[in-house]
Amino acid sequence: MDGNGRWAKYRGLSRKIGHAEGVKTLEKIVNEVFALKIPYITVYAFSTENWKRDKEEVDSLLDLFRNYFNKYFTKLSEKGIKINVFGDISAFPEDLQQDITRLTAFIPEVINGTLNVAMNYGARSEIIRAVNTAVENGEKVDAESFASLLYTAGIPDPDFIVRTSGEQRLSNFLLYQAAYSELYFCKKMWPDFDKRELYKALKDYSSRIRKFGK
Image 1 (cartoon, helix red, strand yellow):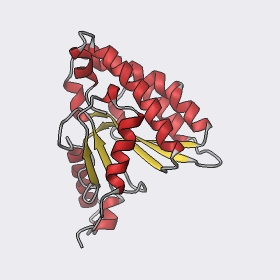
Image 2 (image 1 turned 90 degrees about the vertical axis):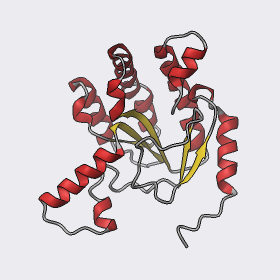
Image 3 (image 1 turned 45 degrees about the vertical axis):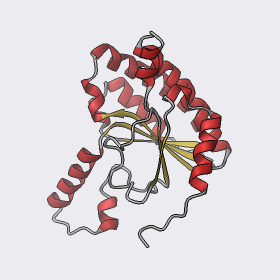
């Protein structure tokens, strides 16, 4: 979900407005993806590096998260969508931590899809955390046991990663899990990423032959 700030800057608007528009896009895309019966969606909402932004922008993002966990994400869970949050949520304000814990603890009777939200997440810190845990436990790990020590334990590795804004890198996102993910880079800023762009990306993915190193 990259490009909210630049989208706003190009229009002479505040970054806060850009993030608000990005939230609207998120709702549309998440609803469309689940309508296609795609079982898992993972979104990168807040990275460990995002704390370096201006305090005003960080505070506005935290307010957006509060609103989302109390409204849209709650509505999704009522429709049978399981909400997972991974990352170090201990750095967030106590009230937001409580919202996250409350919502992620809820398990729908019938799960119609799973939305994974990466918050205060960074792949390098995730890997270091997993290594330290293995060392503390005196464990000799293999690929399967190491994966169980990651934030994403129990979540399938991503098949397809879409990044907007024209940047062509993973930016510390799921570096371990993305070993065999198909990557797609879209020049559109996230607020401009619509149903047409989504289907364009999915069409590109469907044309690929995945070999998994074979």
